[in-house]
Length: 107
Image (cartoon, rainbow, N blue to C red; front, side):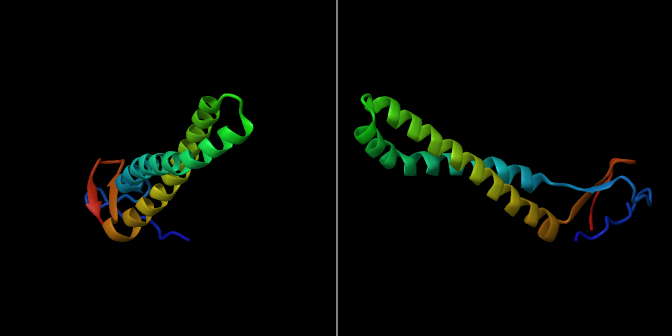
């Protein structure tokens, strides 16, 4: 359960005060890129094995396996990076923005 947003120190409102999630967004991008690279590198070996066993055209099996690994890594890495970034935003930075007066402040 999340804690209620604080009142804005400038206009005293708490209705349109939101947690700024910059690290969450950056974590999703970095995690996605790292996951895609790791997924492609890790799936490359299995794609070659699968292509040589079950495919008449090894290039297609290798390419599809590599792309599948990269896509899986992208999705999982992005989700993990987003979760880590959200925890940093909430528990370390605690930066809020008031949409009523555009003031940004620490909790």
